[in-house]
Picture: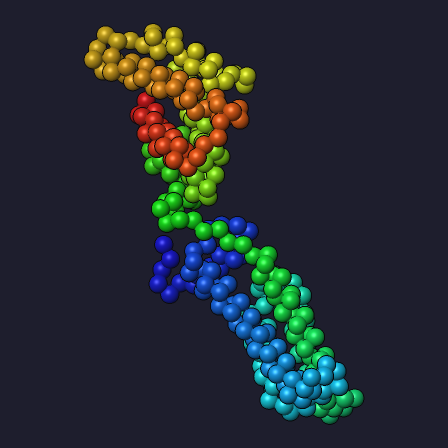
Length: 294
């Protein structure tokens, strides 16, 4: 939990991750609004100035005085935009902004060859180039929106609770990724990760019955090996009977998982929609809660 007054680490240094709408607006939205409006306003001012001075001509010979307020505004907007381009991959935009800024500074020095003279079309070319680069960068930025009701599944290391996480540590990564896939609109991938998690749980349970799964064993062969040890569990007392019944019930449920979910999905024979994947996730959650008690 972030404390009040604590500096929030920038999420934009991450290669990937979940960004809230506030993160996007607070950082990306404000940054690109400042840079974008700066470019748009300067281009509009230069175009209007050329139209006023050149009329219907192309304006190649239109010169703007270095003391013109438009150039002062252009300098200010270059400086303003550069403040927001240091920590982002904005391609050639920072370099072109600095080049334009240097052109304005040189033109204003006493020893400049074209002292106090700048051609409007040259400036427009520079600003338009920056604008086009800016539009290109924006076109390459994509954000994925997760609906609020699915957000609870994303980025949850203990999606099935603390007990399952502790009991089946090796399955935690697949359980978390199953939730991520469901939240991101990949229901079939969700089920495949659930299959992997179930297989890890199965191996763990097999070892509790003193069965050592081989590398070549699949779910069916392991379930077959579990039949005899469960059958031979003692059942003379009530606790022993309940324990044996739990093991038998779990083996039966695992068989249904194999037939209904794992085998068709694992071998690419079936795809799942969101409703089906959600149902499977809830059932696997309930089932692994049961397995965690054995």
